[in-house]
Amino acid sequence: MFLLAGTASAIEDIEDTDAVSTLVTGPSVSIAYNDTGPFKMGDVVKITATFSEPVTYALAKVDNSVLTPVNMTNMTYIGDTVWSYNYEVPNDINDAVDVTVSGMSINGYLIDGVDPDAFVVDNEAPRIKIFEPSSTVYNTKDVVFDFGAFDKLDNIIDYAIYINGTQKKTGTINSNGYAKYETELDDGYYPWEITLKDDAGNKGTSGVNGTDLYVDTKAPSATLISPADLAVVSTKNPLLAFNFTSQDALSAKYDLPLSYQLYIDGEPVDVIGSGSMISGEYVNIPYVNQTDGVHNWSVYIEDMAENSVTSEVRKFYVNFEGLDVSLISPNGGFVSANPEFNFSVSGGAGLPFSYELLVNGTKVKNGTFIVGEDPINYYSVTATVEDATEIPWTVRITDCAGTVYEPTPLSFSVDTEAPAAVANLGVFDALSNTTWYYTYDEPGLYVGWDKNTEEDLYDGLDAYYGVPYVVFISASEPSNISEMELAVPVTTIYDAGTYMYMYIGEYGGEPLVYGKDYWVAVIALDRAGNYNENVSVFGPARTYEDLTLTLDAGWNLKSVPKNLATFNAGADSVFGESSTVIYWNGNYWEFPTTIEPCKGYWVYTPEASVSNVKFKPMSIDGTTPDVPAS
Image (cartoon, rainbow, N blue to C red; front, side, top):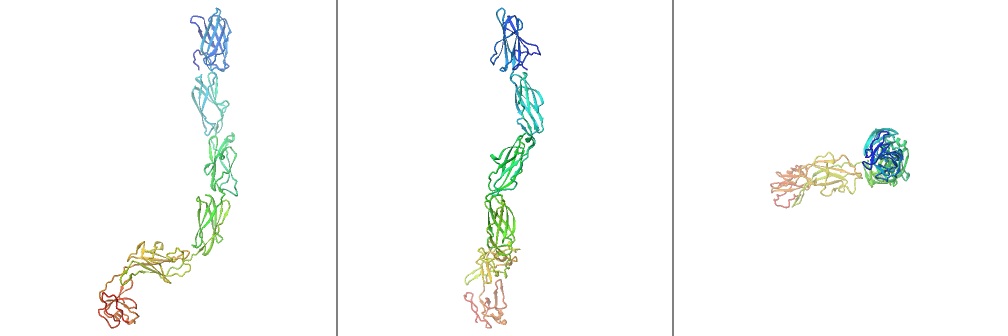
């Protein structure tokens, strides 16, 4: 609706008349129109001028305050005072226009009048701005049509919404206003259009031929074709391409493109790894060089509605450089009956390989491993082997490309028979070292045992103090040697031909303690490290501090040089009656009943006796004891 100065509403054929005059009381002219407008290009506006007195001719001019006015035009005679003019609206006016009418009276003076903003010429269609749909493809069934409209010369605009050629909604909207329409659509194709119409009949549209709208709520599929899972790329099979396809019902029906992205090891492949495809198309992407090792690949597919799918993830192996295999151990020497065979493998990380353990040319074990991420990766296999010497062994490795590796064999020996347990193990208190002037006494234990006679006793450089035996000591009774600690000899271990001696002076890094119980064990080792589980253990044993004995005057240290007759071997027979005789047997003092040769006896006799061995008392400060007469 227009409410401009100089216009009035007209209903049907009633003319719109404005009376105008040059003078208030003089001649005048009234101007009328066949319609109120607004008018648009091609419309014909009938302008009728009625003068207050007859005129000989009349002229009409329609101009615009913005555009260049139209030419003056002669009006058509209707009657002496009534003239008319049919004005055809051009295309270059888009505003309210002024109408000027003038006529020459029969008395020779000019009668004219002006009707400002007489009517509106509206040649401009209303304009539309679409907010929604913002895309041609939607992945939801709920679709919103949201738009705004503007018209320069009209305040009220009519609109209509068409979907698939069917009018879904009509209404009016203020200029610079907004409207919204929500609907639910199934998957499919929906051309749509929003039309606008102003009072002049000018029409605006969202699209002359409609706008495409696709509703697609279903994701496409993604199918990997090749390479197959766990495929191998190597010098034997160097050519490889990534092939896949995708299916999407709506994209296939309406020939809509799908986009794809190839991923290797979880990272997108640039340039050749992405692109567009159609539903059902097989895509082939040439192999992208990768380092040796295990890799994976997948594809991401997305339709125009942004429905997407990620394919399964497949592994593939690249193995151009192959593997490097080395044997480590055993390498010579003796091992147990269940030795550990150690070897190393270098190559592409993650590459699988199979192995066969060959002992003496025979497969004894097999399995599979995977190359680790380190530059050199170590592997161990345990197998049971019969006793023998210089047994060759190697591994036969087959990588994922089928290449076989078999290093030059190493050798080893197996000995499962342990040496005998040591015999005649004895532990006793270590005596002090006494001279005429000093006595050296430290806590210590002497350990002795018979030597083993086996020929394969251990003789390696790391042998226990250079001998094929190991001596253990404990301060509590052990259940096995694992509860004991290695004994440390005070001096070297002494080999007495068929017997071994060792002097222990400490335990736990500290000197032995007088009177404390100790247990000592000795094992014999062979070259294979075997020892008899029937371990020889001696204990408890103690070390004692030497007795300090002070003798009164009259004591002598005596001995006899030869065996005595049994009936004359008593202490009284040898040293005389009433003699006091004592003897230290290494552990304690005793009163001997039989005197043996070459042993030292302390003898106290108040007076010398002539019945057997003659000797005289020795003073307390004497330095040389008397020697019995022979």
